[in-house]
Image 1: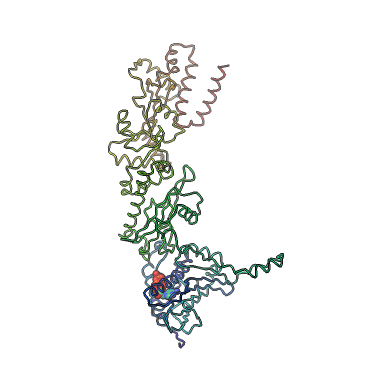
Image 2 (image 1 turned 120 degrees about the vertical axis):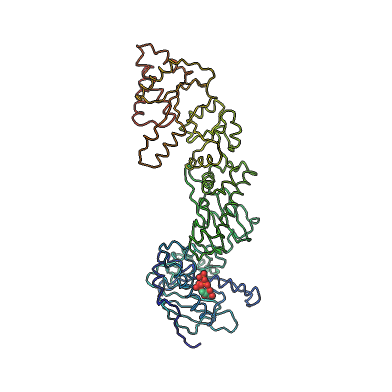
Amino acid sequence: MKHESGSISINTENIFPIIKKWLYSEKDIFIRELVSNASDAISKLKKLDAIGEADLPDDNRFEIKVIVNKNEKTIKVIDNGLGMTDEEVKKYINQIAFSGAVDFLEKYKDKSDDGQIIGHFGLGFYSAFMVSERVQIDTLSYQPGAAAVRWISDGGTEFEMQDSDIAERGTTITLYLAEDGLEFTDEYKMRTTLEKYFAFLPYELYLEDAVKVPEKADEAKSEEQEAASENAEPKKPEPLNDTQPLWLKNPKDCTEEEYKQFYTKVFHDFNEPLFWIHLNMDYPFNLKGILYFPKLKHEFETMEGQIKLYYNQVFVADNIKEVIPEFLLMLKGVLDCPDLPLNVSRSFLQNDGYVNKISTHITKKVADKLTSLFENERENYNKYWDDINPFVKYGCIREEKFYDRVKDILIYKSTKGGYTTLKDYLENNKEKHENKVFYVSNEKQQAQYIRLFNENGMEAVILSTMIDNHFMQLLESKMTGVRFNRIDADISDSMKNDNTGIAEADISYLEKLFKAAVDDDKLKVQVESLKNETVPAMILLSEQSRRMQEMSAMFGGMDMSHMFPKEQTLVLNSSNKLVKALTDMKEDETRKDQVKLISEHIYDLAMMSHQPLEPDAMAKFIERSNEILMKLV
Ligand SMILES: Nc1ncnc2c1ncn2[C@@H]1O[C@H](COP(=O)(O)OP(=O)(O)OP(=O)(O)O)[C@@H](O)[C@H]1O
């Protein structure tokens, strides 16, 4: 062909500097665009071959190669896809690629937040100029008799076209790098970039470092070893990618081992996942992927997941909450959504009907999986619950639809051992406390109350994760009439003896005594005869008042104690020997000191089984304990 040069007809004189500056923080997307184009070129040729419009040799093997060259300061992206004729270069590169970039810029130039667009899809070939001073295309079309074409541009709107010397079908893009693109000639940098985007590309992808120092011959090698290595087959280079990711396989053909291996490989998490959901949908939209429920490493760890989004096996981004319901981001997984409109802004995606459908579908699948475990593998479901409950609860709080789907399969660890549903709990305890759910928020701290509950055949559920406060509020708003009470909020009638005639005078004596012991005139004192005789006293804090306190703590700093005074009540157990002794000693002036000591100690003990003592109170408690022990010797 004759040497041609020309000017690309676009309005903006030079849009490169704008795009360059704008995309600076995500420079590596040029590689994603060029290798994606290479992959598309192969897919197109495959299709043409399938419909008989191309004639590929029998031993045809598709592949993409990236070659970095530090010395020449170049990167080459080579494919053996369909290639382009000179007419096609004019059309696709001079017109489409350039107008695509202009469109793209037009659409987004006013968006101040450049994180707005997912991965900046749609920029295409043009992004090569982000890192290059000059870009060269050498291409040979698959079409019989086509001539190889070279296209060169230094950015801006000028280009040149001439004959190319490439002899193989396909396209080679050569980037002559600008200073700020040189980092990509580093083999490691390029490898990690390629692995990030193309770990699952459908065609084999190779990386070569043109200036890699050949391995030094081992001087100590014996002659035999030398001969053996000369005769040995040269080591076949390994592709960087897995062209058949597990999510594309039919779930029926996947083994448990494969799912686990895939998980470890993708998420570098060597703890086995608990279970997983394989999404495999072709109609009405195309959605494939695997969602894993990870095992929590620590009891109080918040789940921090990672959902990798792919577009036709090319990585787009992690954790895109516009596409994936936010609560699912606590899981780990891969999703391939080839129908997603990715060249649009995130806010558009959020309101897109198609995206909403995907999101609803995933939510449903997750709920279905949990339901099936609950119904068919109840033992496993119980076993997983400690790990998955923060996720399920968060899902319920965030998504009403999810709550509706899982509300009957929410389970609660019971102080009686095992797990119960709320329905069963309410049914089993309705005689003792109708519509009231007692819960434990800290098993260690509330051990004393749990013991009392157990002795009296009562049941509480454990709700001890960070999310449980919100979760209970949600349940109370959904289940009219049902109220949650912490185990230390109230004593139920079933813990008390019937017909306990405690003399009014004794009650007011005890009240006075303890107010004085604690030096708090406002202390609320209540005297009850409990079935358990060993416990002299306990502290109750009404649910309402505790919630208010917690709320005010949440608003940090602000002192709202005057609005929500602490409404702790000291319950004295009149059937306990010590309490009885106190009443018996009320007239005995000589034992005044002992009475004081006992009442202070009873109060501290009750307090300790309710919450940790303040440092001052703790010091006094220890001092007093020593004093009591001394009396024994
Ligand atoms: N390696 C290649 N082999 C063959 N044709 C190519 C190659 N790279 C680009 N092209 C042609 O140039 C056109 C423009 O490429 P460009 O990457 O700018 O946009 P696109 O791939 O169509 O869309 P997108 O903006 O989503 O990347 C492509 O549609 C394709 O026809």
